[in-house]
Length: 241
Length: 153
Image 1 (tube, rainbow over the protein chains, first blue to last red):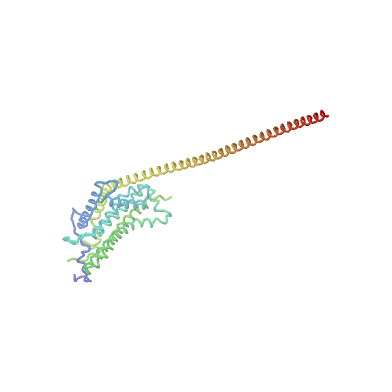
Image 2: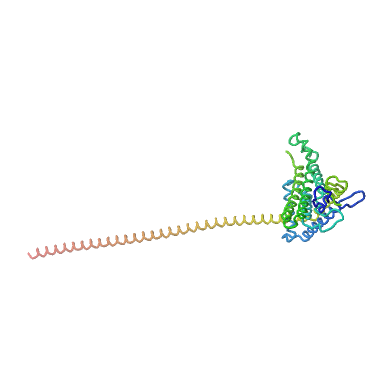
């Protein structure tokens, strides 16, 4: 500890420490999968309970699920457009729900109580692997959406409205996943760090508003990621005439 | 000893890419298919069925309202016609009774006039008769007087 340039208790946070699982020649971050499985399990449990007995007059969990469905449909429809939003709604919705439960799960569940041999449990979206995986899926999706809807005419998009745009549009294909992944990763990690540092410095009262701010940020980040993903897909399938 | 690993450390670090990335991608794709089957399809079916139900119910209600409005205007029209015809009947009846009254009055006046005329004529003729008779009687008397006077002589 004393060897660090500043005597800050980052040891408590264990930033950048991972619990490695060895699978064949590959190593994976165990803590990310443990939390993501738990959260996905909770999400699926909610979905299974809510859809078990659905009626025309919704009751209980069905209301929540229908609200979520409606919300996701509106999001997909406004960004992608009336024509193909149905094909992409499950993907956009899964992104939104997965990121949302990951962010909130990371913020609300007291993972720190569980001791791991190395690293610590937290939001799966605070790991760069997760966010890059999600962002690359978005990139693949909008390429697939554009090519499957318009065939090779998809590449007209790169010279639209003038061929001068070509280099910028090519750069965009790289900046889109980069900004998507780093925005989510940075926000969630920063939120966890700020809360952890404040909890260490002032264990009472002061971290609470920051925690609420963190919940707000988490929800907003999930919405931003899903909206941008839908927007990129919408941009790819849009007809320029 | 726990240390702050940040950039590109050989072991760990914030930007430590490994097999977590593809595995997470596969996991999210799988989750997409699972959620599509468990959540998006069934909930979408229920919501869209309800939307259809609401839409058809609303359309039916609108149709019924239109029917009711049509009937209402028809009935109002009929009511107006009935009122008009009733007024016409009343007017006709009033005119009829007026005419009858006038006719009866005229008839009565005419009768009265004619009987008065008749009476006058009768009176006149009787007076004339009486005058004639008186005259002839006066003549007779005169003659008689004259004859008597002449006979005495």
